[in-house]
Image 1 (tube, rainbow, N blue to C red):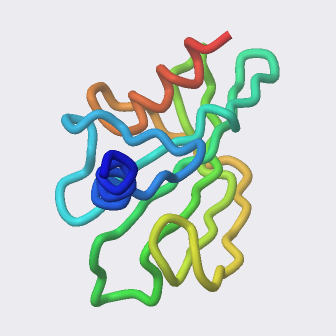
Image 2 (spheres, rainbow, N blue to C red):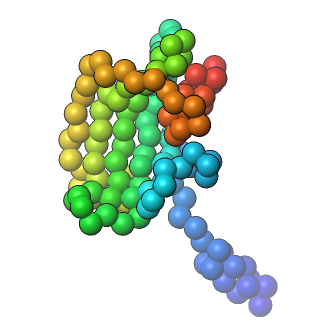
Length: 129
């Protein structure tokens, strides 16, 4: 009986686990039907600049063909700015399904705005040593 109870507990308490992805705290999530994550294992430091991967998961989307995207971002820790290096779009949630090759950009630096999703990512990237 105990064994059956444990099996039922495991089955009914199952939550999908997305290895590596950490959701941003609720106050920093964009409004609407999406959730922003980052993977701390992808933080790479080179001098005063740091790169990481961000995952944006869309709950529902009627305007585009994708339900999630991965964005490779570079942060300038000293000047508090960010730029997008690459975006990959996926047909399913959490970076699954068919992928569409994104773009690579040189330049396009933007200031990191206080209390934004990029601010949280900048802190995670730049304060990690």
